[in-house]
Length: 197
Image (cartoon, rainbow, N blue to C red; front, side):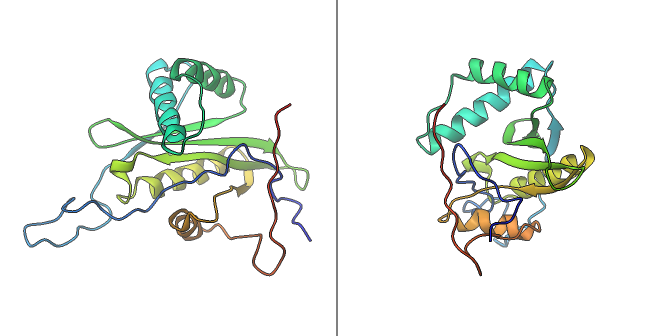
């Protein structure tokens, strides 16, 4: 039986990469030892509809995400305008992750919706992306923790996402953050369908 909270559609199952190995030599000490996973200082900011610089950074990250996986995307200027409206009308929460020098390295987009099963909201993690050069350094993990915190603060009591079957790294990261797989284990595999209207 399908859970009443299972998502029923998605534009694209995001092939999210969260925990790729460190690049060779990244952060190694003089003995060649690998550093602790917390050798960075990410800054995660909730994007507002009036911050054009943040909106532009997010739009470029999302465009890069789609291009990396050969998916179409609007031009960054158009995407920034769409994001601005979605944030302003309360239909999306957007988090921007920057590194210790202020460079944008990751983004998350959360869609909050009223639940049919409780008085709380549900949080759908629609997009989570970390630039390839900064993967495996904990940015995705920190961004995911911030997503959960922001969703709770907004009144959500449930979060869900979709990822591809092949993306084992993302699956491990989501499970480490407390998500559990709800389809395919002990029950039928569910298929996501979509169409343009």
